[in-house]
Image (cartoon, rainbow, N blue to C red; front, side, top):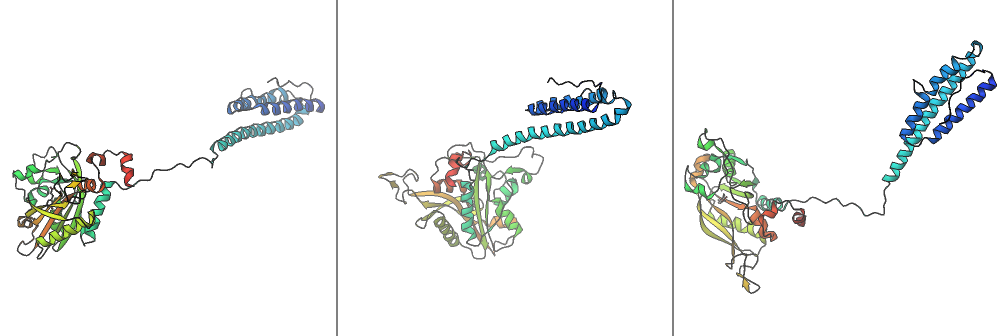
Length: 371
Ligand code: DAH
């Protein structure tokens, strides 16, 4: 940067012309040398800084120094120089920024020969998929869908389902209780629902018979996780109440549902059981889908059904008349059946999954197989 503004003593046209030529050529050269944003700032300040930029020096060294009769002319020339300097500084900046954006555009240019980026597609979770499938079977039979809260009161989860206070039947469901409920009456105390059966009660409170509902949802038990247990799982509950509903209707309905879910060759068997809210109660078994109900597979005892040919799948029964008492239904006029099934258990059988934890670990390699 060798150029320095000279102090003018000769204000003749020829001398001014020559000094201006030197100045402008220095301006052009310095502009051409600017290669970065930083260079540009230095360049701008050198010419335009208010304190000691060349334009400021022009005022002092040329304009103020000019004799009276040359002032007008020098003033005009100085103004032209100022405009030119400002323009050059601006143009230099545009050149630098333009260069930067050209580089950016080059860097961002799409190379159409590269392989595309695949976005992994999401898919329905196998548990939700199975739950929807189960619900779909009953919707086709004219059932409507009802839901209820996961945080329930003791009343809906137990009492209204005919589990009396302190009755040992409560011990069959390892319950997670919400703390700090001791000051409330027992029936109002909160817990995590252990089954979807409370939605039966909520539905009957809401609707008069006849009624056909399925209630899908999440339930919670105080169970340590292992290959067959999970503290969180899902159930689908069913309830049909009308006049003259019999155990035959229950058998026909569930036999149809199991065939719809597992294939038309599946058989069902009803085994006596106990639930406080149904009388009589039954466990439903289906013929083993792995060995076709024979109990042997590839010449060896079938491991899936422990060689029995049957797999236990769900609970059911005729609604206990005591339950109607809690919802103002007249047990002399109506009858009904109910059933409840575990969704994970059905998904495990349908998809041949050997560990329930796989449903909850969130491993994409497992989940993407269901896409
Ligand atoms: N709530 C029962 C459980 O979680 C399952 C069940 C059994 C539901 C019989 C029913 C039923 O509606 O009738 O173990």
